[in-house]
Amino acid sequence: MHEDERNKPVLVVDIGGTKIAAAVADAGGNLLGKARGATPDSSDAAVLVDEVERVSRLALDAVGTPLDAVAALGISCAGIVNTRDGVIAYSPNVAALRRTPLRSLLQERFGKPVRLANDATLAALGEWHFGLKRSVSDLVYVTVSTGIGGGIISGGVLQEGACGGAGEVGHMTIDVNGPACPCGRNGCWEALASGSALAERTVAHLEAGDASILGELSGGDMEKVDAQLVAVAARQGDRLAQEMIAATAFYVGVGLGNLINIFNPSLILLGGGVTKIGEPILGPAAKTARERAYVASACDVEIRAALLGDDSPLYGAALIARERSV
Ligand SMILES: [Zn+2]
Image 1 (cartoon, rainbow, N blue to C red):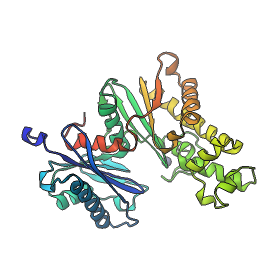
Image 2: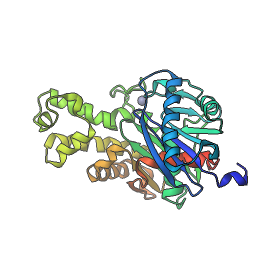
Image 3: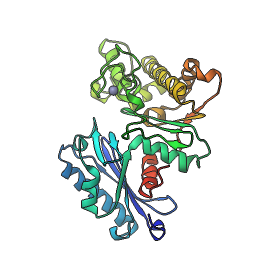
Image 4: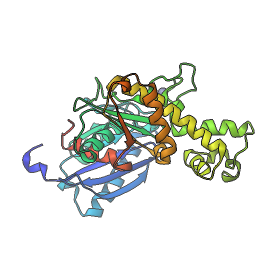
């Protein structure tokens, strides 16, 4: 990016499994005019690009910035994003992204340079740069929500891997005989410790007839039993809900222990909806992680909640749009 382009705003977009978020990021990294839309339930990439453009224009209009004034686009995507050719190799939750040359499609649509990367990788980058001001050089960021994603800063360098797939920690195997994962394999961390896993584990107990106020809270509709509702029941003292959260926290901790052994981070930041349950997840998960991590006996690791909330991928996208990936 040329020096005269550096002061121009960039457009940042986060394409997730259920929503599309967009904002205008100024030269200081502030997110302005945040706008939201729903991810289309379509496998047609053109329909997705239409919605990305609509939400982007809402953000631009909100701050009165014409598209012409934007220097570049930074795009955060759920899935394995090949950062070299701009093709989404795999995306379990967004059908329109599968094997889609998203970078070239968006460059054609917007007439601007487009850079894209995995959402959790960008969240890690955003947390590291804007949240922590790069005060640590070995950071593991993990988001635990519907699925589990992650991003790794090792030795002060964002790890992207050979084709953008580094940090897909949700699919490390925790139990070879474990439950099915959306990726088609078994016993992945995501299949045991995500919000979906928490909900499925709880529903299995409810259907087996275990006593809980969740029957009442859900009106008997098991589709309504999600991580948030289990958290509500737990706060009201429901024993089953508390046990299910404890089981999830244990599995979160098991995975974190593995990551401590591999990366020896000084800090682990936890984001995503499940970690918003707070201490009932964070406390036991950190305890289990430290107990199970061989490396933790030699070198302590701080484990705490992430700093930037749901906006962290957009902050990271603002950095890659300005070619500041590392
Ligand atoms: Zn998996």
